[in-house]
Image (cartoon, rainbow, N blue to C red; front, side, top):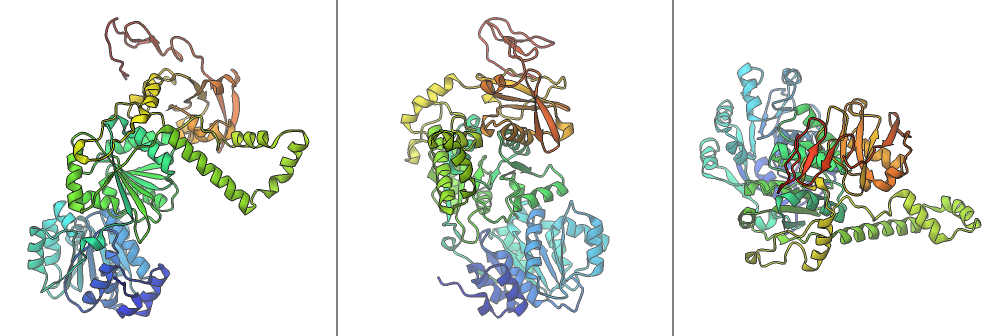
Length: 609
């Protein structure tokens, strides 16, 4: 179906200029259907999927129909969450870029009252807010709704699910009866229909068929993986696809914190977002993520609605959402505005039955994903590196270094040796160590009722068996390392690894990211070779390959970082472990100092605080 141009919708020159500045020419289906109806003054009940452009569908008519000469509140937009309110406010302000005398203010919990009081007292025509904070201002008398011309209930179904029904009805009762009422909802349930019958006047339904609002550019995959294997599967997929900007959804705040710490410790740039952190911090995180200042946002469903980030490459459901609608909203963060995107979902145990329900709800069929092997990941990295080298040569960006190569050739060195040495120095060509450790063979086979191939191919099982013999003791540890106030590593080094100490800690601003940077840039150690990291107040510890530690001076090597110099020293490796750690005995492990001991006999290894 051919989409109409915005210029054909009889909009003001200011709005058309703002739309053009945003880079849009054609209206989306929901915009083409809703804008003419709303411009005529009719009430509307709209059904459209997230990411379809519905914000502009109601914001453009709201701006066009208000009176710039009046400073009273004329448009009220209710949103279920502060994130969605912020997103709607941002889009409204973009559309107001060339509209003189019109202003809008977001009002939501967690933000400063003083600024909201100031804006409301100064006079605004558009208020975007959450029901709770709107009610607060109504009770304080700082918000008057007697001049409202249009009320928009965005994500009305979500507001009802969150228990805002009484607030919604009270707010609507405070507005004039002759107002224009607009409902936007993914579904029109019985409670929504009751609100529509009570507050809307002969509304016109604007509904986009599922086949139009489905996301054809979103590739949806699921991976059947045990919970204990999720971390390694996630990291392997990130490395294989070389994702640089994505959102990873978890169901709990605790899992968000643990997964964010794990990604950071493994050398990835990540941050977290959930309801347990302050609003100011949430705002800072979202601002940084929109600017792509870090790669992966680990979040709960508090972020599923209201995130609008360009060029988002992937959405990963680390945990399957509790509700099918939440799944739609999660994956709607990618593949927006005609861009391609990818959604990956991890399922385990009974989750496979929930997955079938989600497929029926979304009327889509997810493909079973095959987890790439470690060799495939390395081959993909190598191929990508060679492509970059070819592109650099073709672009002529490396000609300035030709004289340096000529000097080495004059010394009798071969071109192959020179190129190999440069790859080694850059660390870009190191495929010997990967952030992804091999995963053992106890992955579940594909279920017969799915009629698909297994997550791991049968020919890969030999690699997994070999890898099982060299698994690290800490691989089952699903969270950040424990920190010992005595400034000693709390665990023995993994096989083939050795602890080193760094003379800077948390008090100097040293973190996992800084440690990886110091060792890779100052010590020429590939970033993916850094193992477990432990932080203390004035000192830090990291596990590195034994070969690297053997090249360090016992008196310490000085490396530079952004805050000065840091001294790294190898820590002694003895039978009893580093600095009085754990000693392997016939019956288990015993801690030398104030620890525990286990009697000989059958035992299961446990890490204890």
